Length: 288
Image (cartoon, rainbow, N blue to C red):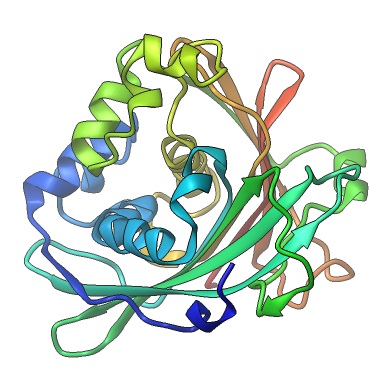
């Protein structure tokens, strides 16, 4: 791993947002919110659409080619500064901000943790989103930490001792990955080709992690935000298990207490498939 690559920005990628693109993303993630389905304002995780090429470019720049087949998307953290609407022209760029080698432990596999930071601005220069993407490169240890490793977020174990403030049942459709790939631009074959997925050691096609994150985001909006995306200031998750087409999910939310957070408008959440946690350490920060 070349430490000189840390902090080096990619070239900008530009995207003109359309009503149709927003509506397609909402439909592809089973989002029930009318304003999203009509393309009037983008759902939260639509923020990954303008940065997708940037994320790939930052990864290609940072990861040796021979290690690409060992990469897992581990966590994603989005900070929102303004909503995305039809007609916006967005410019995105990204950079690796740091990495560290990891030993195998209770919550980590042996490998290297890398963090990329992606930013999106309007054509006038106004900040729209900042995103921190954590990936794991399995079986490769890059040694001591270099640079920064992004902001922390975690679900406190004590939270599960009290009942959630909301619980949302959700179903992943059999064709979910195909619809999501078309709407998001993420055409990775493990989400679309059964044989490729099996050859990669998976049980079959798996759902995009960001699609599962989008499911969790609309559960938050419908249950504690009055379906108003402008109230969401941050959403952060850790991906802990794969999701398959046809799975039934449940997203559970807890409001954090004053002892657990600096603001009373924070929620933590997780998404389950039966007894398996597929999204953990979920954090949603809301404005009043």
